[in-house]
Length: 582
Image (cartoon, rainbow, N blue to C red):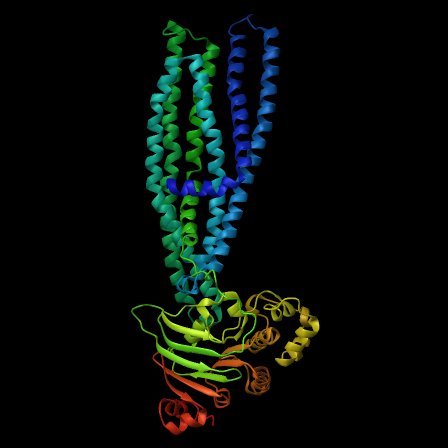
């Protein structure tokens, strides 16, 4: 259990200090009244110490007072629970919001290099674990501190000697609990990490279930799942075993305390030394001995939730402490419009320093030009798109739009200048209308329909059960791949940006539909700069400029005819891949 983690959690709770104060005051009153109960019970016991010696007259007001203290104590216990719940769930809400906002500020390289399921697990499962542990911890903290201090005060008023005995035995209980907590913490850290790993694996297998079934990978995926699940089981069992030792161990120590109090109290009552004690006072002291050790029992009883919460908090803070995407410069420009002129000068970039990718890239694209980017797999075609959109920043060199370095432009305004259709479609659970208008605000129904018609999506949309109100399942699972692509194209057509990026945008569409889509693209590309990453013959042959890439460098550029005449890399690529289609 890290003190730094605890301090950080309490910093998140600081804005709700009013509830914290309310919880403390309520805990003070609740525990004080609870601790006053044994005094009243002891007095009542002293009224019935022998035959014909029952003081009925004195018993009634004592019992009435006891009933009143119990009732008022219960009210303040409810107030304390209300305040601690408010602190917990407000704090956890803020943590979850900050974690989600942090993900939006993280560079794309972090998302690309971490399992998505593990990230989801941190934002959802780990935050829930923090909530459970924080609620338990706060409750035990408030009641425990006040109970320990209060019982000490009341016990000192009854017998300082027996109180000293109780206090001397206390460190043994703390030592046992602390030793077991340190032993189990490592297991809880491993348990939460493995929980994130299994969440990531399940998310990956579910999202790729068609591929899993296509390649008959079910049995192997089950074996891998069983291996991770077994590791989760092993560390979970160890964590539960070690943490479960805390409660019986501390209860054993507390039993020793109770026995010592009973034995010494009885001797004091019999001998009268070092001070006389009545039977009622012994009864009260035994009750206080139980009250004094109760916080230790309660904390060790919930040690599992608390340890899990701290392990989860550490995992959550790892995301919150990640280096964010380089912020926009204070004097960054906001693009409101663009001619679409793009220049790249001596650009170098690699995802990993040891693996070179983009090397000394230079290109010029002017307004209205259609730029096709071709080359073998892994040559850096899609990387150029990532650099243009500033999903990644170049290691060196400059990329300019209308003569302005994109690093001197706000990312939000830069990305508004681009419309992008990727080979991998992305649709969210919502209506067709919502998916088409995803990148646009305050658009009319007529504009949405016009964009769908331009993308040749209107006809299939109208055949859906509820037309534009048809709800698409997550990632478009209830429509075909081609239909999903048409909706993504309609989405970009509605945005109507000055620069277009089409990364294999028609790869999932049949040839007949592609011809119609290409006509729509041709109309949409008029007056706009377009970057087309594609292998299809129709797209490449119609381009104004073809950039041929290999091993991260632009090795050839020109029109389709010019490049064929050079009889170079492009000609070889064309002859090997497109000759049959031609």
